[in-house]
Length: 436
Image (cartoon, rainbow, N blue to C red):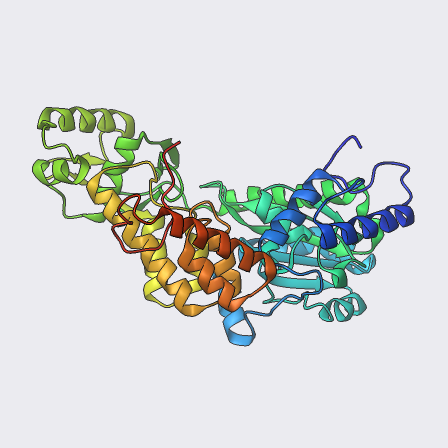
């Protein structure tokens, strides 16, 4: 096959491919191996689905209904481009007896529109607004896999992990925030086997790019004095600052400085900033002043003021977004905004404390809430794969064989590790891995 992201190569017999895929799916769900002709993108997705504890006879769960769904959709960034989606895809979906679907970055369906009879059929598998179609919830499917891998994908017939979805074929493409590059969700076309054609993949990709272009045009103009800058520091060692329409990648030390000053709009003295940044008491103020001078040259003269050191622009960070959603009890939205530990390579004392407080607060809320999909997302993320407490909560909420097996392995490792070193200072239950 010339393009591994296209479901059927030219000249392939769809009926024969369906039969071969059903045999391959049966082999995988019984013995765990992936035979030909399964594409690599699908094989990897099947493995992720199995590790998440998804069973082939499962179904999607509806998380948002009625007023909650309406309020969430109204606030979602993709609401601004729904008229564009309908203009570009609505007629195609209706005339072709297909469905237009849009999901958020967690794979939750926000809109499902199109041919009426097709919608009624889709209702039978909970392909409806408010239902969660992430890979960790229902396995391989185009919208869920597109947000998982961050690129357009087709899923044809028995490539779907859940059996009741296998009569369908779909193609989806992620839509990114033009300011930050983060995935906002995906746009999807779902219907019959005819959608396995390469044109459907190119179509949804073009629609997604058009949506990103329109979102960029809707971004507010450059700030006036006092406007808010954006700081992205979760899940990355070098933060990204968006200021005056300019995107700047900061060094690790500059990332720490901007994050700390954003947390203290009133400003910090040189001594306070020095203690917050350096565990080594021998570091001199001269070193700090040199870093601040470099930061001022990088960001321009208008951002960093002194006596005390402070930022002249309000800075909205992704950390504060997670904290605000947690405080409001919007746990799903908080988990969606949490894209990884804060500046994970930083050893600055104040950053370490903030990183652990944020992660521990979110994981404690997830464990208390006991939502199996949110727990699975955390457990299968790089920062949660050794989190025994979360795996215990996931095993209680979704006691599938793969989840129980992973928990047993982690607890065996934890038992073997007892006495080899001190535990994590925050009290969380993590396995201690040696440095790479």
